[in-house]
Length: 255
Image (cartoon, rainbow, N blue to C red; front, side, top):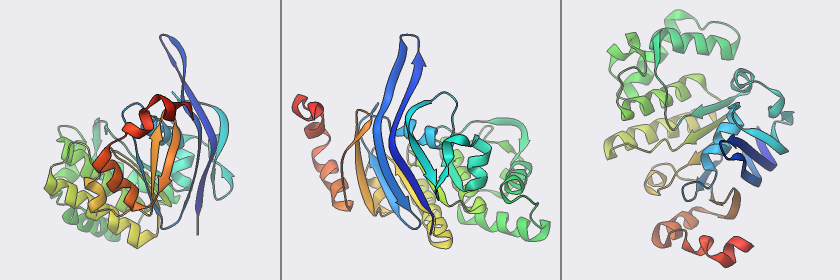
């Protein structure tokens, strides 16, 4: 059993207008095997939380802790966090010209595990995972995300998730830009990784449609950099029906 603990996390960034506080006291605990969905309006801090956990240098933690099995994540570099078992599926995956998928995947797996995977078994594992995600075999020889469609980039993110086997996955709006078929394939990949590895998952989304495929254990509503409410899967159904209005009224904002 592993645990990812976020304790009273405050995060700011520097803008042209000065320092801007984004996270204002987030506390959240995720255990192995749990799926936590974070929902909320635009600008509420959801992606900031994801990037901060992963170690993006733009975000300044001014207060609070992030602990992975009791170890201080904030003292680790981004690569050390990955080696410790954290994985971020990015909202906007970047292109990496000059680096083929084959080289990237094996190099990353070697860095995470501390030794290179055996070539024969690794090649089969990659091939099988690509087939399940309906990624054409030719993509193995293409540069990472270069010329890929939005849906193809998201499938490649989940390919990494399945191959790298992290303790905890942070999925930052993995469903954005996906048609219904791609959403189903991506969701199946997340569910496979969850079942095979017993990983904990933090799923950030605007919409409930992905929650029809990936069933959350807990749902958290993010508003103005804080968790405004939390509950079970039924909370997502309420948000789908009623939106975020009751969290955005002046009275609610003052609480």
